[in-house]
Image 1 (cartoon, rainbow, N blue to C red):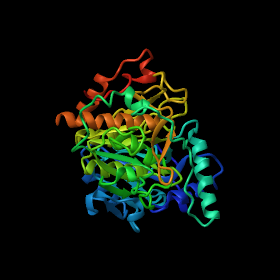
Image 2: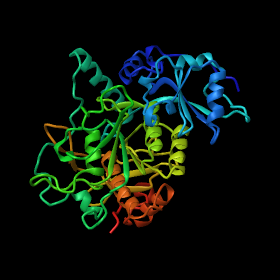
Image 3: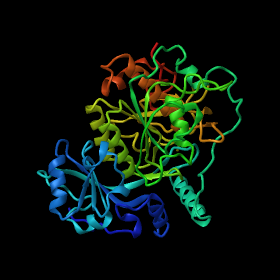
Image 4: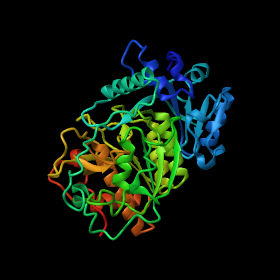
Length: 436
């Protein structure tokens, strides 16, 4: 089947282009395309070595994540390479010009004896924010970047949290209570939890003494100038006893935290950076990988392959279903990735929560957690907030039994969820529960 060869879209389609450059380049296009101009090549399972050689035989200069310590490599680190190979997940990110010069084309039928399964366009992804559909998220991210450029940089990104310190008068947040976290004797000790998001406020006083393994995949410091990542890490891995009258908001308070910055300080990213973060988390055998991000794009083979690679390695990827009140977005719509819907405090599905391919639910409305200094605490809503509830409980379950890894951990979360009087397409198996 013949197709028109892929062409570049300007400065945004090179391998080392920043997310800001790609978003700004996208403004010059005549449509509302949500593609970056780069491409994702997914190999057939077990054919990674052959796939790498195939790219090289086409004249592509390749960088391999295995050449970097702990496979911690972002696209900004690959120099003049045309492709970055991620061996843990069997995927390569390829620049637009390199693909245009090769014999590969999107939508072409791949020869049956080829190690390559499919070539897909790379899409923009965004932090999962309530009432902000994919296109609005795209435009908002561009506006934030443009404002930063106009002021010489240094913008701190959107502030979307309530700063009322008295949001919770009880000893724990409503979400932790609903998930029966206070009754659990597990702490997440010995379990690696990776949160792929906007980074973390590494100096947040509630995390003093907690070590972080960190890496950036977007060319910006891991320090979180947005707030989304710090909030998600707070819920999944925050402290057992916050200072003063602050309610307990964290679940796996002794877990090892892996911070992967795959979204910029504007809350925006791209498939390739997310995949690089997933590859890093799997290479480091993080039992739980939490991703509160996505887009309203179709199922992507690369995410499905990454999810399967994670399960094969004893890891579980948990992702937000999205907040468009529509079908579950990507990457949560992949069958190998656990998708999370949002519940309100009355345990009803949140009006914004996506539906369809839903595996489980978590508290997602008015969730109190950590945010960057000087504010320190705030409230957010979204399937983004439901996801770290599931991730934190997953870490507790993983601690209770070394056999609860990968698919076994996913099955345990589903089997122990609190059943709710709503269709599985809205709430999946029900509300996630912590172990006793």
